[in-house]
Image (tube, rainbow, N blue to C red):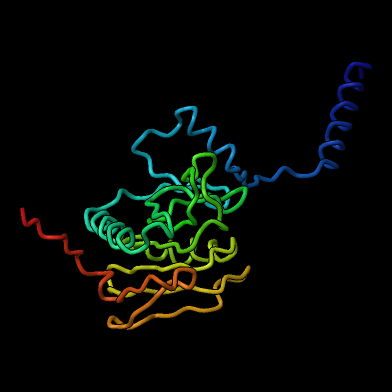
Length: 217
């Protein structure tokens, strides 16, 4: 047998032994940061019609907003704007940064007033007085994924409006394990956000069309 053949055999044996000692390669989840998420947006990865949320490092494609959902969000915007005045900023479907890996876009948020209207940076959990999610086809996702995330971030109060069952779930007292208090008020019950006690609403009014003032001119 030639020396070349012996060398080849030794090389193969050495390579095989080396491979056996290496740690096996396993696929792992890559979690985007909020900074990376913004860079993707600035580079034009998402078009203007995209509805994308960053949830725990994952890009979540949201379904298109239906007419009923959009109408309800407009009604709530008007209802809250008429009542809160200068005590809060009513923000609709804009980002809230929860941590380094999550930046959802809730349907509505009542924010602490700021002179610049958060021009320098998106609101954070500590800026939120009340967060509202309007749920129809996304009820399970909102309830089981986003609400626990809001609790972990310390959002003080979340209202989850279930359009299908005409019911509101009120979440208060956040903790790392979820909200410690969940209420399902009756339709005729009056409620006020814990951080906006001057704002009083009847549960049924959240599901009724907001009446516009009559033009007498």
